[in-house]
Amino acid sequence: MSTTASRTQARRAGPRTPVLVALVALCACAPALHAQQQPAPPPAPAAPEAEPAGRQFWRWLRDEAHKFTELGRGGVFSSPMRYGISPQLARIIHRTAESEGLDPELGFRLVRAESGFNPRARSRAGALGLTQLMPSTARWLDRRMTSREAIMEPEPNLRAGFGYLRRLIDKYGNLNLALLAYNRGEGAVDRDLRRGRDPENGYTRYVLGVGVERYRGDGRRRAAGGRTAGNR
Image 1 (cartoon, one colour):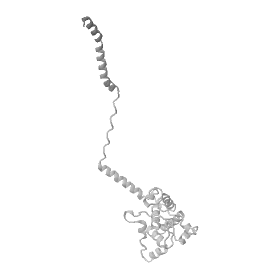
Image 2 (image 1 turned 90 degrees about the horizontal axis):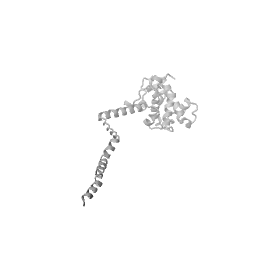
Image 3 (image 1 turned 180 degrees about the vertical axis):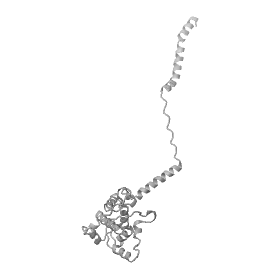
Image 4 (image 1 turned 30 degrees about the horizontal axis):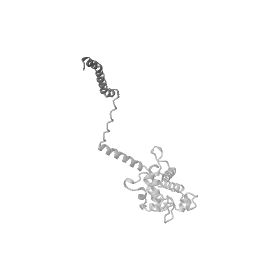
């Protein structure tokens, strides 16, 4: 190859080398430039700290105590679960007890003891319905109760039974004596009292319970502000 031809070829190849080098450098720097333009991802949220075992226990204990307190109140919302009855029956018992001036909690306990919340309950002695009214007593309390079916209607039965117990509470001024008169009859209780005998036959414990489950009220419905409703 002649010297002239070599120079001509060098001139043709020379300018391409810087261009190729620049393109290679630009390609190498492109990822870095792209990374600089993209915003940094937000930091991952920190994992919540585990609650200490002691705090978990005290929170659980507080929640359980709150549930127990709510159930113990015997309100219309807790009573279906506490006594295993329908919400409809619980509302009727609660509403009727209040309308008759009786503490609803005592009303629930009375119905549980008398009939086990069975509106169709019949005793061997002939007592009927939720509050186990004898037909003669039912007619004395409400002249419209002229048949067994009428006596076993839940709301009239509750109204008569609760109203009668409330009058007995007012008469004796003592819940235990009132319950015994409801169970045994006023004549039997008055006779034992005149003779200096204790009329107790175990019925009060059956209704009111024992120990921590014992009913602590006086049987009268509580008015607004926690005061006892006045005499009927």
